[in-house]
Image 1 (cartoon, rainbow, N blue to C red):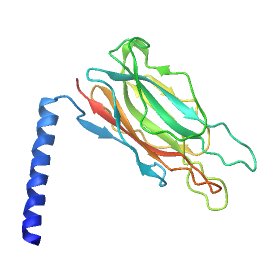
Image 2: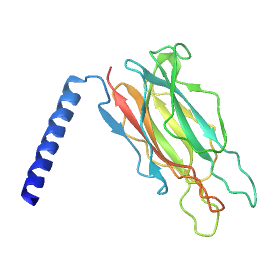
Image 3: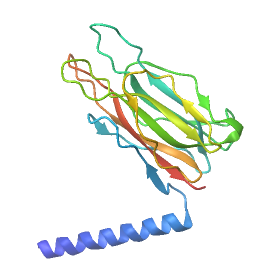
Image 4: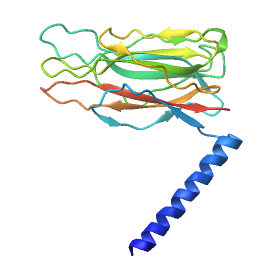
Length: 201
């Protein structure tokens, strides 16, 4: 029984590897790679991915941010990220994708890459865990555009920006967030981490 299950698993892995090689080489519909960073928060679970329509790439973004609540409020800071997908003309014929977001805060106005360029890399600002105070996890995000411009979101200033992610060859085409569900009267952090999908067409 164990040998049969092992053989079946091996066949699945081989099929997956073959499909991935084909996707990387031929670049069919769908993503070709995933970019992430190493300093994301540790709480919560990965939610569902959301993708731009075929042929669209993220030319801009907006953030859902809860302002500082002071003492003794429970701060969550960054709650959500939206990608604004275009065919290269900022603000025209856009589609918005966001994965799951936390319940607190309000959405900012979009920030756009200049000259019809696309988002290709990111860096996440994260507050390290604290044991006797209010945890916030992810606070802000920066993006790098394909024309090398950098955009920083209107998030909060707690924590530090980590290293930049790898770079998408053409542009980001989707995202997936890691969200801590509301904890009632306990310490909430909302968005902890994010990963982005790269497409080539």
